[in-house]
Each structure stands twice: as C-alpha cells, then as structure tokens.
Amino acid sequence: MRHLLFLLLMPALLTAQTTNVLFIGNSYTYSNDLPGTLESLALSLGDTLACTSSTFGGATLGGHATNAATLDLIAQGGWDFVVLQEQSQLPSFPDSQVNADFFPAVHTLVEAIRAANPCAMPVLFMTWGRENGDASNCANWPPVCTYEGMQALLTERYLEAAVAEEAWCAPVGVVWSDVMGAVDLYSGDGSHPSAAGTYLAAATFYTALTGEDPTPALYDAGLAEAAALREAAWTTFTEQPAAWNRFDPLGYEMTWDAGQIHFTTAPLIDSLSLNGSPFPSGSPWTTLGATPVELTLHSSCAGDLTVLDTVFADVAGLPELAAPLAPFPNPAAERFSLDLPTACTVRLFSASGALHREWAAPAGRSTWFVGDVPRGVWLLEVDGRWVHRLVIAR
Image (tube, rainbow, N blue to C red; front, side):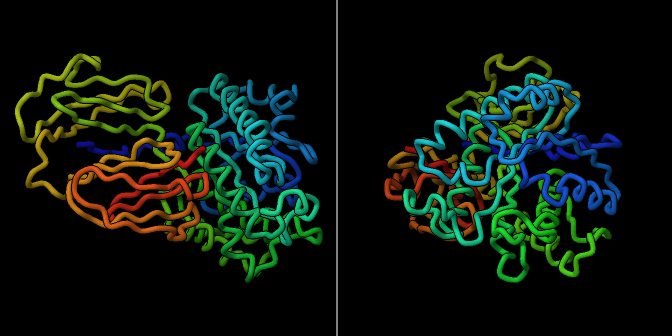
C-alpha cells in the first residue's frame, strides 16, 4: 500500500522578512506593473514581497533563455520564486511547435534557476486567451479561433510544463475565465490586461506564492471590483487545491511493498534517515500490522525535520488509511491502471474542474482507456476522497 504525507513546511520557505520574486516575461507582466501591484497587495496583508523583472515587449521564454540580462538576474540567486511567462500565443500553438519552442525553453530556464539557487521555486504564469481568440492564427490552427479554445490549450500546456519541471503554476488564466463575463479584464486590444486584469493576476499570484487568502487585503488599486477579484482568486485555489501543482517542496511519499519501504521525496529534500540510519539501508520489518518509524528529512534549504510516521504492512481493518496507489503508467498514452482496495467510483476531471468521465471501478486492479482523451494534465478523483494528477501524453 502507499501512504502519503505532505509535510506542511511551505511556510518555512516564506519566513524571511522579505520574499524575493523575479518575474521573467513580457508586456503581459509589465502592463499596469503587475510586480508592483503584487507588492502593494501583499504589503496590505502584512507581507513584504520584493519583485524584480526581466521583461521585454513580445519576448519569448526561448529568447530569455539566451538573453544575457535575464541570465545574469537568475545567476544572482537569492530568489525565493522565479516566475516564467511565455509569449501569449506560443503555448496554444500546435504540438510540434510547442514541443520545439515552449517546453525546451521552460526546461532551460528552470535548470538555470536551480543551478543558481536549488531552493528557489520556479512558477509558471498561466496567461489568458485573447478576448475573441487568436485571429492571426485562426485560419491555420482552428483550435485558437475562440477564446475558449485558446484558453483550454494555454491551461493544458502550462500545467503540463509545471508537472514536467516540478514547478508551481499560478493559474491566472483559469481565474480569468471565471471572472471575464462580469468584469472587463482586457485593455482595448482584447489581448493585454486592463487594470482589473492586472489586479486579478496579482491576487492570483499572492495566493499561488504564499498559499494565503488575499480577500482581507486593504489595497484595492482604485478598483470597485477589487474584492470580487480577490475572492475569485481564492475560490479557484480552495475549490481545486490539487490542480495547480502547488506541491509541498519538502514533502515525501512512502510506499510499503512486499516487505520493503520505498520513498519518493520532493525537490527540496536532499536525503533522509530512517530510525537514525541513512536510507536506503534495507527494511527490517517483516511482521504484519502498524510499525512506527522515525523519519528525518534533510534539506539544505530548510534544515532537518524529524517526524514520526507509521508503516502499514497490513491495512485490513484500516480502510480510512487504505488510499489507493496512484494511477500507472503516469504519464499515460492509451490506458492507465489502478489498484483499489474496494469497489468505488472513479472520476476524471479537467484541470479547470469540469467532469469529463466517470467509471465504476471494481476492487483490485482495473485498466481504463483514455486514448480518446485530449493530452494534458487531468485530475483523477477516487471514491470522492483522493485526487491524483494524471498526465496524458502521446
């Protein structure tokens, strides 16, 4: 069985008096001064965020990956978060172009970020679709002819990049979708943000970076709709907490399988010790039942933390702890499988929370066809209790 525990250590990364954020992007970031708006919003909530930018009109992440000014800023280190914002259309282009231009550029920049400071968290800035779709590319690529089609692709590709790079995602585009019918979020060109659009992005980033509720903020930027925008940002996170890849960078996953213990650790865990001995050192547990263990997680970013956990070699009589194994293979192409302790309902949701498919799954191993499901990041709900990210890639 697999036992999951996500250690609530993320606030430890934010305890410094000032949180340093580097924004890398273009006019979607510098229009109306998103970094400055975020600073003011955070300050009104008692938090100090110091934002620096490397932003050029029309810049792509591929361009930033070879830009000396951007690379020098990354190399300075000291960043708690580095935000990556791609050119507004590029992630919605056909797979061949996205695979050639977007994903490699993200990877190159994330590698540079972690080389300069392994403790920094890269954050993907999911942008919004154009108000009336991408007219300049519609004829050659029909999926972007509408706002809805363009946004679906942006959501998919940003989340896919976040999962692949073990980065967080700020889902500005998803919050935008929830609000755009009620608030004018666009400037006159139907592409860049209005002041309200920038404020919505700042509220989303505040929640994405801190995990905290922005609704009590006192800074409204002179907008009558500011409270509604903050509420929308917070609602998106609380309704779909697993959707945006905001994992605990100091968490771990423990698997007990046939007398052996296996660990998967989050990016900021350097090594671990089990009962005072470096792991791996073999598994001494051969009896059934619950065995307490002392686990020490070693992190150069957060120091050492020792926790008590329990290995369950036999989950009989403990159904509340019998969480199913994660889906496999993951990423999946045509099919995925589940090992379930009991028969239950399995539901597949889009990254934006829309129900796509539902199965009645039996106890034991079952395999499900997803060859007709669009590629991207999906959420798998098992018996209404456990949510796994399932990446479908071909």
